[in-house]
Amino acid sequence: LREVDDAAALSQAEALRRAVEQFVFTWQGRPFRLHASIGLLALGSGVRDWETALNWANSASQLAKHQGRNRVQQFNPADGALLEHQRQLQWITRLREATERGHFELFFQPVQALQNAAAGLHYEVLLRYRDPHSGDWISPAQFLDAAARYGFLGAIDRWVIQHLCAWLAANPRHLAQLAQVNVNLSASSLLDRDFHRLLQDELTRHRLPPGKLCIEVTEMVALGELGVSAHWIEQLRGQGLKVALDDFGSGFASYAYLRHLPLDILKIDGSFIRGIESDPINQAMVGSMRQIAAQLGLLTVAEFVETQASLDCLRRLGIDYAQGYFVDRPRPLRQLADDVRLRGTQDA
Image 1 (cartoon, helix red, strand yellow):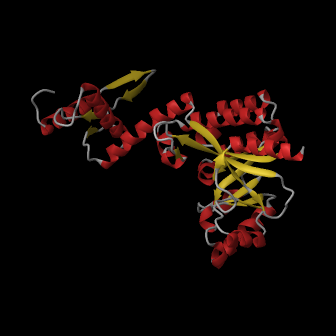
Image 2 (cartoon, one colour):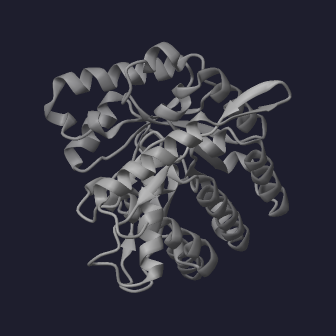
Image 3 (cartoon, helix red, strand yellow):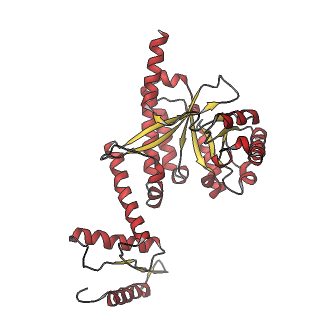
């Protein structure tokens, strides 16, 4: 639009939006309406080139979609929501590059047995992104929101499963010592038939015992669509895998729905664990969780264990496993292979 001010541009954009909204077309006897999400950008100071202008206008239109669609959004560089939207779009580009150029790496965090010293080697696999410019390791907390919003969680899950299975197959001595490795799974993958097929194919291709792999799903994911989630969790267990419910206790309906989920392990949310040694209420709640888990035949894991006092308290309460910075911090998975080789050399 040439030689118009912001008000006139907004007016014309609204007129265009309304015109599109009023258009109706019919297909197979059913009427359909269209909606337009329009982004506006004033070509003035701050716009360096046409590529920047198009990117900013596109960001405004994408924000219009995410705020409900069928609306006009003007680009404002000081708009916090727009800046966050741009940040998330940048993350999607970086994540795509990460899967293609090796900027992801698998880490592990040990899980310590509290009641059975002969339980074997347990750990959880975690994902880290290595910034190609600074070399810093970045946790998924920085990019999971962007990945969820733009449908990239499934691609991340596939990358993790494929690389973990390949790594385990390449380290048979470690695999022989391994009792269980836990892997987080998003809702999109849990409910995706193709992902389940890929998981089975990877286990078969690398000849991995499925019983050593435990899939973690969060309480929010599992309880969101209970019947559907229960079906797909049963599919995982039918393949021989174990399933853990992560962040247990973070929701309000945990107890009511727990009996309807075919689980193996209950991971108690860290909000109940921090400072538990001096909090009798949390001790009572964690104790009740353990009792219910025992009635259902489930093992329990306490997350975010940060002190010896917390660990001792959890052991007294009968919790089966502990995980957290006091037990050990996350480290690159490749170090486990080095540890096994070193022990093998010492044993020889």
